[in-house]
Length: 210
Image (tube, rainbow, N blue to C red):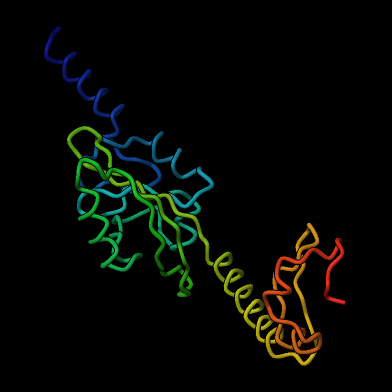
């Protein structure tokens, strides 16, 4: 093979490996040959919050959902992950995941969205090797609304428990099998009973409550 043909083949190989200019997605600051257009475009198309980060903590690829959430531009210099997540979490992740037995982990932590409001993310982290580079993939789920709903539910349950305890009316809780599982003090006072005489009584059977 002559020198010209070898040069042409080398150029084609580098372009196929992604060393040429990518039309979309972030350009890695190191290990440029690791990601080609097809990989970046595939990540971009995924309907999940996905970030691919290099050892310098620069984002080298991101899904369209992630770019929309964090306001990331597909052009220009790759942003650092510390611009999105609190540094203390990133330091902790990096430290805990360097061990051979800790390749994957899941954490819940806050992040700042593009519009400035804080979101709560459940994120899966996975270190892996691509060529000579160690890369970190981050797949996130926005659980902000879920956690708010859970908090609201807890608040309602707390309010109900307060009413249940302090109401002058007698209340009992009965399960699907007809057994009393709880009662308030008013119920005990009305019927002149001790709590031990009420709990686990089956209302479908003859009992001494009346």
